[in-house]
Image (cartoon, rainbow, N blue to C red; front, top):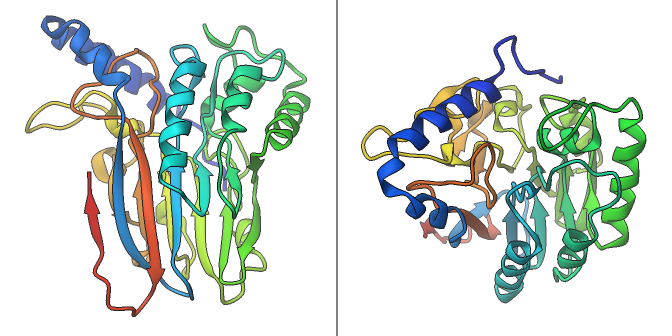
Length: 304
């Protein structure tokens, strides 16, 4: 089911769009840089079919540690996350964004501070694969033939610091809740079926870094969480984001969307930056989800 970048990669169009946006924002100077590092918490209350008891989930995605993001930013995100007292923490991919000749100790030590009784789980994203060495780039150096071994080394390093990476795997974190995570759509071999195997009648949360998986979802998924798009990262009044790194344009840019079979999904704006260290009208976000049993009479709500 993997979907590699097209001949004219969406990523390149994304970066060109960001460059165009940067030139247009030239008069704002440091304001757009400052916006890249000022994050907020978006709060949502939603019913989840199959859930028997409420669960509080915090979703963090697109940390992009390495090129423009250092441990200090991650420390603040972790502190804010723990202050929300989540039951479960999920990471949506692109944790890494630089060559990883050795496990990133400063990042891992900060992530180890995350606290959630049901655990901390994550998936890989396309920039993680650059960090493994699958492909080269200015922050990655040349591609390396042993990238699968590097991926496994980093998986183990994350695990030893309390973060379980799910690559086409699922886990019953509670008697009524199954969390599945799939491989990256562009560079991995994603399998939703494998991620949801054994879910049974439990409520299901699916984590996919890239929201472009949404039109291909099978029926019965309770909620899908994605990142990748950064909300476009640079947005303008009235027109929104000039470029979104998605085959579907603005359709899955950010916020609440629908996949196949009317499956609900949330696409986070993420926390880090890519291409350029700037954002405009697109605040980095920690996503707080208070999920409730379906039919409890509580309305779905959202608030910044």
